[in-house]
Length: 417
Picture (tube, rainbow, N blue to C red):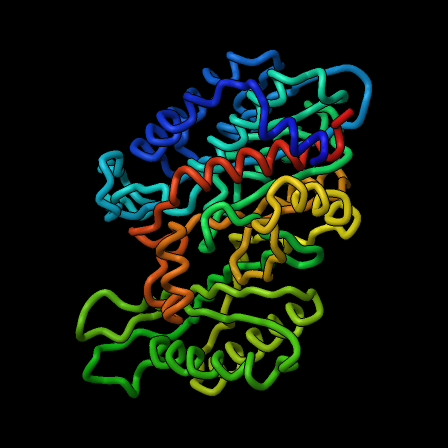
């Protein structure tokens, strides 16, 4: 047993508060950019530890700096915003909150992506490292990030001077709970989470009465043809050995039944692991949209607005080589190889701003009996709730234990004496 494994199995830190803290966050979630209650709860908990706390970085971002003599600096990040989803888990601490969505309509709010667990785990790691300063030296930075779901939080913290307000980390670490056997820690080097962009395309047309389509340039028709043509880009413009996704999230046109509108709007979501593939796909999207507009006689050019950018999460080989053996020792058979995922994250904006190497890993959170049965019956896709579903809920015990230990173990890989 290694020193880190022994410490994490025999530590004296009080973690009895974690479950009530987690359930409180879960029951009272807040949407991206509105996380003031959650931020206050995090700050109050950090007051229990010997650290320097800075709040309101890039909105509700919080950084706690634990100094413990000479040595390297390791940063660990957790996010804490929720999603506009009505919860259907049925647990006693389920969220019943309703809040205005971005379009002004009322929506349920739910921690359907596990950020409440991420935050609880990082605070738990803070408790362990604070209670066992004899086991490490250097500087530990716990970073709590808002607005991950909108892809804005990490960039906002960087834009608000993050790199000049805290010590420069030698390494950045983070984790995400996802479907998988609860407590299983999954790691890999290289691309782990896909890069993504959203694209808002405005297609110009010419309005006319619905009874006189010959007087119109119908943008709805153009948009429909574009949607069809987009499906051929991945199949015909992308090397089958590469990966790309183009999804049409929304198509909006018109407001009544008997008027052909003067414009239509498409919103796409695109994902990649490779920059060259991304450039090729974006060129193809532009070519298809412009050509359909010309083919239908549109008198103006379409416009393209890029937003919701997520950087590729590309784990550093050296960090993986350092951390993975520690995880193997701490978790044994529950330390396994990860598979890259097509979802996206804004975590890597933080290490990129510092020019620091990083690793981001996945921890399984599906109730163990459910996962084992679903795997045995080949029904994982049918039976296992995934992130952003209204029934997504981690199995608390093994998940909080694994995420807390993984956060502490990753940091101690670099700061352990």
